[in-house]
Image (cartoon, rainbow, N blue to C red):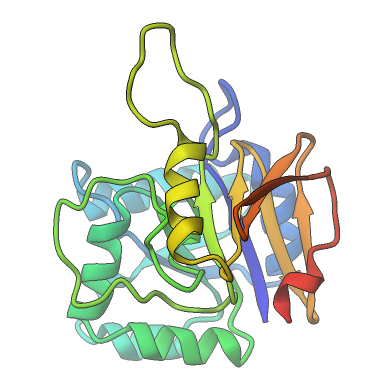
Amino acid sequence: MNLLLLSSSRAGDSDYLAPALDLIAAQLAERRDVLFVPYAGVTVSYDDYQQKVQQALQPLGIRVNSIHQYTDAKQALQQAPAVMVGGGNTFALLQRLYQHDLVEELRRLVQQGLPYTSWSAGSNIAGLSIRTTNDMPIVEPPSFQALQLLPFQLNPHYANFAPPGFHGETRDMRLAEFMQLNPQTPVVGLPEGTALRLLGGSLSYLGNTDAALFQQGVKTAIAPYSDLSALLN
């Protein structure tokens, strides 16, 4: 498989997708057309979302076609040279993929080599399920089971910050709850501006700061640019 899973569309005050342009260019190689899946967008129209991504990828000379503009979404996916899945609300994204009967087909095509680029919610669905998303369940998908391209859970936008006077649960506390009930299932927390890259059976963490691995009740640091291929077993 050929996966580029970005935690976020920005890093700090960067322009949209700007920090990832080199990674996207390397992943797509000579491909100059991508099929964009805007289904995670809720407060933005699909047309506006497509234009936002198109503008961001303009420096690479990539043409962004959006799946919502096709009469037959499944056929559009089958004919795509590469697919991009944007961020937004993870529950809305997965619900709409199920609605259009695209979950199994997208999984099959990516497993057969279709390049898959994503950020935020789009990266969340690459794992086993969406049970470690940060998003509010504004809709109810038929299942929380996601694309299952990776045999573990993802938590994009990972941070454990708690402002003064905050008395709710931190991210680590929420992920500790998941570990309590699912001790054998790893969760990779991806900070802003970082990514996972899967190519040729090798999984790498791409980031200048530590990520976090949660498993069997223990949180461990993932050092910058670590090889995470062991998590594929």
